[in-house]
Image (cartoon, rainbow, N blue to C red; front, side, top):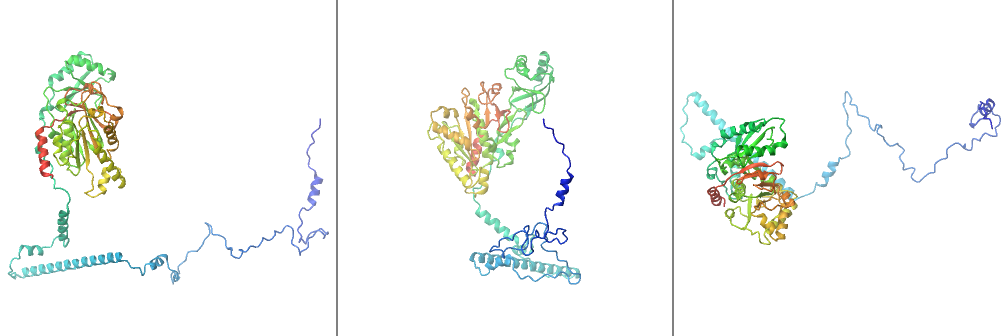
Amino acid sequence: MTRRQRREFNKDRHDRDESREAFKFPLDIDSDDTNTKSVTPLDSPPAYVRRPQRETRYTASKPSVKRPTRMTISKARQVPSAVYGLKKPERTERDEREIYLEKFKNYNSVIVDKIVQERVQREKKKDKQKMKEQQRRAELAALKKKRDAQKANGEPAAHKQKPALREKQRDTLSVLGSKQNKLREKQQSAAGKRIGPNITQPGISMLGSAQAADYKEPDAELWKKIDDAFINLNVEGRVISYTSNGVIGRYEVKLNRAFRVSNIPRLNEALKEELNLDELRIMSPLIGTSNIGLEVPLENVRPITFRTLFESSSLKLRKSDYKFAIGKTVDDKIFSYELSKAGHILIHGNQPNYDTNVTDNILLSLLMNHNSSDLRIAIASEDDKYDDYLDVPHSYGSRVSLTDPDALKIFLQELNDRSVAFRRAHVRNIQSYNSRVKFESKKATLVIIIDDLAALLENKNPEAVRALIQILKQGKPLGIHVIANYANADSGIRYELLQLLQTKIAFYDANNNAVSGTDELTQGNDALAVIPTSNKPNRISIGAVNKLVKQSVFDHIKHNNR
């Protein structure tokens, strides 16, 4: 086993290394070393001196000044003298603008000369009119001053004949000055160049009578029966308010907070037996409250007329916003919506006596506020229910048969033409396109009425169905809207087709094929409406349209909007 040596400081070795000179300067005169043989002669360069760099051909052209950095001061600021100020050196070099303008010194252009000449003439004409106006003002002021002086001195005014009416108009100075004649000329020229028919919109007076005003009074006996029914059922609840639209009445009931929502269906059945009512619908909860609403059909119905819908909504403002009104909600509010937001509309399960009310309300709302250059109506039907709309200037061709293999081919061609035109104009919707083009090139909103969608789908006509799906997918931004009536409530609709029809208006349907909750509706003009901006359906009483009202509106449009 080897023993590890202890490391100690060797003083002798340290002194010996220190006495040995590792580097000796050759020109050290004060050196004590007498051995001159190790000294390098002065003629040859020492070994530690750096060898000269190899000369290149471009040595003379290299800059000898260092590159300026961020901290380098390139030029000091000139300090002005207290006596002579700041003496700026004379500018010998021309700036870039002078060099640029030098190119166009001898440049002659006929177009530029013509523009400059027209501008000069226009300015001269303005100056001339301004001088005439000032002279006329000075003459009138001098004349007024002279008359005031004569009146102050008591001198009688000189007898003059009264100038003619035209001369008197010239003497009077307008507030607009010389611009008055120009403004009148512009108005006359604009009236002469106006494009489009002179249109007068149908008046509200031709819409018939309004809804009776006594529909808001509640039924006191039914109010008391409902309170007694809750007592008999041992449920803590009482009626606190009542609202109605003339067809359906709603009794707002305040329940105990401990009442569970899952017990609403059993409460509905129990109230039907207690009140002896065949049709009762519970709305739970009411919007904005924690109460429930008992919706009961009225015995004495007050029909909702189209005049009531038109007068009570924003349609009476006569805006070109493609808004339509179809009825009233249970809380007596007008149900109106814009066609551009509604997209394509499905009318499901129409009742036999009310099968055209929804379509008539939509089309009449649009016809009252839009002319033939803004709106077009196309009919695809097997019968003549909508032939009255083909006699107005808004009609888009003749009636199309649904059994025809090329039933929707004309509409598909219009869709493709609009798609190409919008793509060339670099726009995506009809609003942007109409704001960019002239009046003659504007596109009208096209509304296609499909009377029986079930017959079109059941018929072995794949080309028409394929065209319909393409219109439903691409038609909304291009200004083409479909209003489809699906009368057969027994058969269901495919989910994909149901999603393409964004707005749904469903009548009584025991199977809830289109909208859930239609099994609780009453037979007749009672419907649920679902719009794209809300998933919760609204119960609506559809307004009734009189045939005389339709005919009066059509006659006015045909005779005044040609």
